[in-house]
Image 1 (cartoon, rainbow, N blue to C red):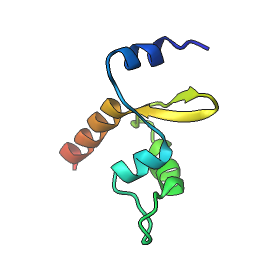
Image 2: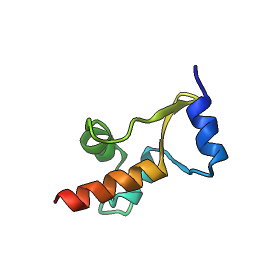
Image 3: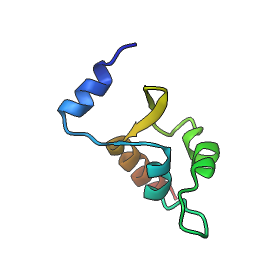
Image 4: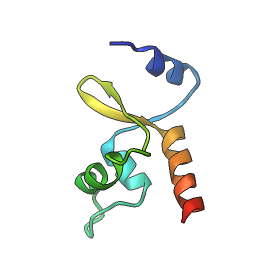
Length: 78
């Protein structure tokens, strides 16, 4: 497993978001205010234009800077 991207991002001060954090960050919450992880994974994370996650210890994590850029592009597109 190549950890170079992870170590580079950590050294640059980039933050990482798990699926729950991505869901909340993108406004995907249930009526009870809980993260809509399933909705995020099934409707957003699987999109070809969404940033690829990094597998860390069996969990997926996304660079916050890449999620920010994706969200900005989505707002511009539409």
